[in-house]
Amino acid sequence: MIVLLEMKERIKLIYSKYEAFIIPVFKFLLAFIVFNTLNSRMGYMTRIDDMTIELITALACSFLPLGLMVLIAAVFSLMHMYALSMEVALVGLCMYLIMYLLFFRFSPKDSLVVVLTPLLFAFKIPYVVPIAVGLLCGPSSLVSVGCGIAVFYLLQTVIDSAPNIRTMGDEAILEKVRMMVESIVGNKAMLVMIAAFAFTVLVVYLIRRMSVDYSWTIAMVAGAMINVVLLLIGDLLYDVNLSVGSVLLGSLLAIVVAKVLEFFRFCVDYSRTEKVQFEDDEYYYYVKAVPKMTVAVPTKTVKRINSQRGGESEPGMSRQPGRSVETQRTPSDRNGSRAARPQGRSGARKGQRGMTMGNAERQMDPDDNLEEI
Image (spheres, helix red, strand yellow):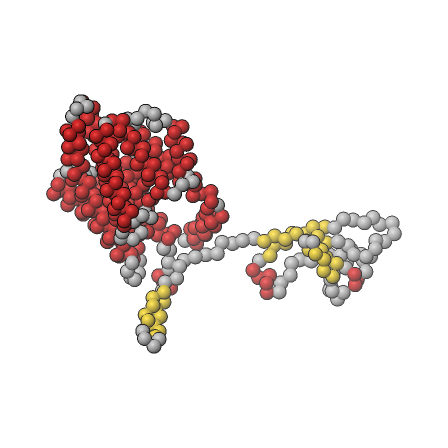
């Protein structure tokens, strides 16, 4: 465990030192994966389905806020919808406006959730989302999760309806709009996912906020079980055609990811829990203090000591250059221990010997017992 804690502290030190470079690289990679996934799954507009455009746009997003990344991704998807049909793009634009109003009203700071939710759905590992959001965010973040789910099912509806839309003529405007609206509103799988994920986020958030021991572990396990139960109930009621095996494996993966998040965000030692009670003129206070598990990363300090021979050299003897000695200072050196002193040469006057440390010289005490060489 100590090795893992030291590793965590080193990672935190590296992140704090290179934060200005790590965050843009993360944004670049995330934006590139998002744009590449959009182009590979839709790809109706060939002008933007190009690796060069993806790289340039991702590079621009690396220096922009995450909210603008969400906007650019929405523009990409609308351009693909427009290349398929103008009516499809109009329906997509209306849905984006509704989701934007909800998102801007309740959780404007959860842009990362809106980006990652449809991306994880595309990679078939969406069950990490409600547990991670419940552990790291607040209850208002369920709106961001719902918006991300709606975006994924909107794009999936467009992909599934593309063959039928292409067979329709340009004059079948109302038929295209009605087909898209009915497909989105009547998508029972989307409604089941939104309801199950929203309830899971609330349960995980409420449990991890409790003062019981191992609240985060209890929250992630309870959230995974509740999510599985709700999805299975929704599958039985509305025939969503969910894969039970993928739901169970995805929930286990979600618990593993949640444990990693707990290690970096909420690593505490419940064996050293303290309960304190005190009062003032108006209140009694009952405080439960749980210490964090932290270790100090060992550091080494190496200093170079250059010794010079004091006094005049004897006749017939050549003057030799000074020697360099490397010493290591440890925390115990502050209690008065000294580093090893260089030994002097014969012929030097006893009261005039000196030692150079760095760029400063200090006179040695004439009474110091130095071994003559």
